[in-house]
Image (cartoon, rainbow, N blue to C red; front, side, top):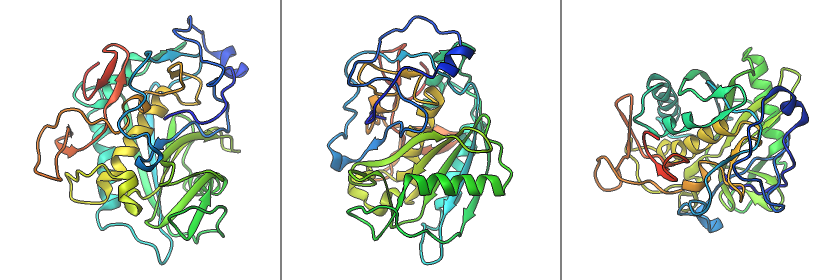
Length: 320
């Protein structure tokens, strides 16, 4: 995601653990390296004027010394309090997507394989994903911690982090090697600053926070079809609102794998692998009007943006 925050040099603690190869390209003063606790970036909404993969031009991704996820484990939280809704197949389709990505681990046939060309001082990323489970969270929403243009209820990033921490702790979910996806119900907005809110500026983001249970990687995934014009590219190969959310989920997942703490792989302008190909879908494999798909993962159709490949110096849907 496009880096919309201050970056500083990678953590001293990380540098002490990881062997740091020569940088391919140093970050600019406008995009210094990220730091723990920051929002690492966003999937920009169409309304924010960044649709179409605006980061695809320019340099390849450069390594900046921080860790990647050599393997990854995913948990999903569906925050649906009383009075709020999700489409009938929303949870089951997103759960199936994570299951399919895991089932095809090691294959070269989808966007996740491109991540394997990136590494840190401990070695390369393996396409090795696991879906560890999901829960429906019916906990009542807190009082709005922010205000956005499209919804009457708005969650701050601190509120989202707090709920992820609460749910993960209650379910005994270990933090090491894991990523936690928070899917909020339709009509629930969020902001991570007064000027950066869901649907106006972003469709999703990933970041991390420190908790008593350990450092926690997470993604905030608002319900994309709350504002379809902002976050839905239009194709629904599975005929459900989940299709739009799955696309931006893939963006966040791939970026967390290759840039877990905001200190690993991004280009000289701060774009991660997902940013450089945002809203760029490449060639279609099949499907009719409004239901096209460009990926078959474990035999199921999905419409996912491409991911950046340094090997190809371009956006890819499979291979390197």
